[in-house]
Image (cartoon, rainbow, N blue to C red; front, top):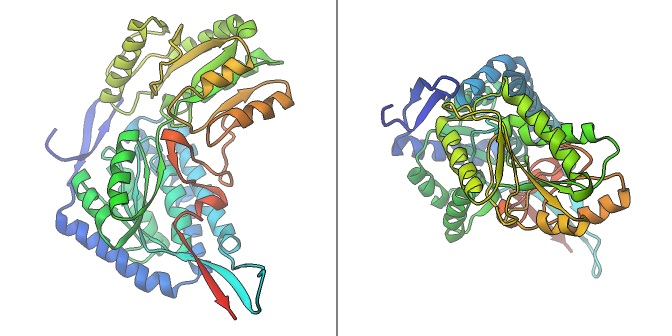
Length: 446
């Protein structure tokens, strides 16, 4: 492969499909300038209702083009076609949600005065140009939950997508133009990391949203902090899946498999550490392992051969440290065999991004919570129990941004998404997603 940073490489074959030229510094300047101009002109002159209508059209175009869009990300990062279509449809639902609710979320908020006459009100408005830095694992969904609320609000966007997602990035740019957004409202850039560092520092940029690794989040936050820019970070996760009791072991095992293997295990909030109390551990592990190994046929590739190599190294380190691996085969390029790790050290805190599940045995609820919280991450978590009082008690004790009880895949466009600790800060989706990059302006009249 040549020196082009942005390229589509089909992970199922290793074939280089197409390269895309990296932006020149002049093109980056033009992108930021266009976004700044669009903010000064379009954002100031358009109404929330007008911007909501444009976002509604973005949703419609996602649905109209879902088959084409799905095939693009299947080529780029190997996602199964049905999951790719589902991602496009969920992205459309996010845009529709903000089109439906923007005026309510952004309505003036009166403040009841304690002293004095007159009035006080909070008016919500945009702050300016935002930079989005997006990952490869959900190429449309990640953009939707950032761009949707902020464009309705009136912010404009410069978007740097992952280097392996240039085709979906271009398709999204075209959707925004076809929906009727003016030039500069949403601008895709094929930028290098060095160019992005300069963009973060640019005084025209008022905020940054990044979904990615801890390392990338720390680098972006450092530059943003020096330049007094607000940042929203959605980083890694090592989400616990706690099984305390069950009335239907097969259903609980199915939920654990679904929670671990969505997107071939390449999700920040996948069920990464499965924690089971001792009295049902053996039955759970037997059934769970059987279901996992049965997934060997038809398992999609990881996003790249390099991703599979990284996972291979992590699994070998775990085994060298005393863990037991039960696996359905050997790695072949970007294809990684489904597997189950048991007998892991409690402090094995690495995030496994792929189709390998880690299962831990604990004595009781207290030990389960202690192990669940024994991680630098704090994104999502799952609790399975037949005791609703226990569910509420455990949910309160878990250090995470999200707790799902007796369910996986229960996320929704109206539910806030985000974490604590080294999983980042800030929220996306729901009404909280539109409230991050907003000027809550106080107007006090006496």
